[in-house]
Structures are given as structure tokens and as C-alpha cells.
Length: 289
Figure 1 (tube, rainbow, N blue to C red):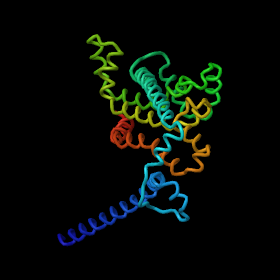
Figure 2 (figure 1 turned 180 degrees about the vertical axis):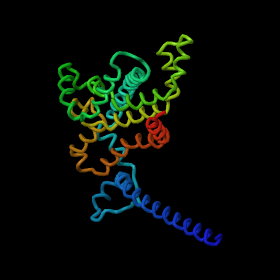
Figure 3 (figure 1 turned 90 degrees about the vertical axis):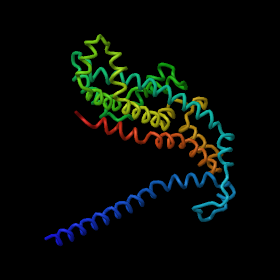
Figure 4 (figure 1 turned 180 degrees about the horizontal axis):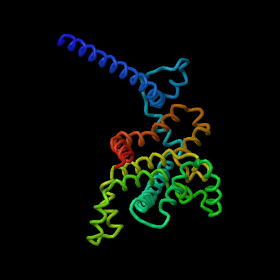
């Protein structure tokens, strides 16, 4: 009996090792497929213009990397100005969005007012409307307000997110009611309870929302492209498109790739630094009770 048990145990361990080996092999292949475009983008950005044009068969490595393309990307086109515009847009939009999201989530999670459940249900139903359907309405509104080619016109339509409010509201609802009642007994106002109790407890989710909004703003393309035709208000996404459409972007592909790498690098670094907090915040938002 013991011999049969040991045999079954060894077979089970062997199957487990084989399963893990196959899983890791498939994940490795998938990772290579996903990361290859990034590798090719970086490789092209460090090739010289002459070396790139002389390749009849694309080379998968280079023995003479150069940073000249990055210098050209920042000198031949106003890429630095696009960075500054995007930074202003991202910081302002994220800050206003956080204020709106935190206050709205607190109202839906803790405050009692007539029709709260109905209002929240209608609010959630807005998630079913594709964002493309609201672009025309937003465009007409911003145009009538004479906010085209301005940071205000860029920022206003992006300061509210139904999903972020819902995510944070679920986190606030998980905090025990006893803490709220104890705070009210001590004479704490609702705003102070929000800032001193709920915000510190739900900090991982708030950080997650902040990071996701930063990424969303940095990659924003459709709305900035529609509402701005003045280069003084171009974001990096629109700037890259303008570079691509110009003679510089079409002829000098290595410099174009250098500009794309420079624009992508901040988001990659941001995600690598805060990836654990992003996962923790999203997972916390999905746990009830």
C-alpha cells in the first residue's frame, strides 16, 4: 500500500513539473511576441539614418548604436513643447478628476438622500454608452463656449469617469459603518471623516485610479486631435501624428522611432514602479464585504 502511494505521489509530482514547464514555455513565447514590437522600436531608434536605409534585409541587432536620432527628435520638431503641454493637461485633468471622483464616491457610498439608488443606477447606465457617441456633443459644447485651442477645452470633458467613481464607491462601502457612527458621535463632519478615515484606508485604490488616469491622459488622442489645430496646444500623441505626416517623420524613420520611445518611456517607468499598487487597488475594488 505504501509503495503504491509513493508511486502515485511521484507520478503526480512529475505531472505537476511537466505542467509548470509547459505553462512557463507558453508564457515565455507569449512574452516574446508581446515585447518584440518594443524591442524593434528601440532598436530602430538607435540605428543611424544611413544604416537603416542601407538594410535590404532588416537586422535584428546593431553593432554601432547612436543617440543622434533622439537629438534630432527634440531639435527638428517641438517635441519638448508637446511634452510640456501633455504634462499640464495630465496633471490638471487628474487633479480635478480625483476631487470629483472622491466626493461623488463618498456621496453614493455614505450619504443618504432621496433617490440615491435610482440616481446611482442611472449613473452606472452611462457606462453602456460608447464614448464615441458623446464626442460630437462635447465638441459642439466646447466650440459654443469658445474653448477650442485651449487647455480648458482639453480638460473639461475628461474630469469625470463613471468607472472610477464606481470603483472607489465600492471601496468606501467596504469600510465598516461603525467607524462612521463613531466619528459622528465625536462631532466629526462628513468631510473630515472622508479625509481622515476613508481616504487613508482606500489609498491603494486612489493611487490606482490616479495612475490609470495619468496613462489615459498621456495616451489621449481623439479628443485633443479634434479640439486643437494649433501646434501650441498639441499633446505628444498629436505631435507624433504631426511628425509622421511631415516630411521629417516619413523620411527619417529612426528619428521617428526615437520620438516614440521618448514619449513611451515615462509611462513604462510609471507602470513598473506602481504595478503592484495598480493590481492591489483593482483587486481590492472587486472584493465585497
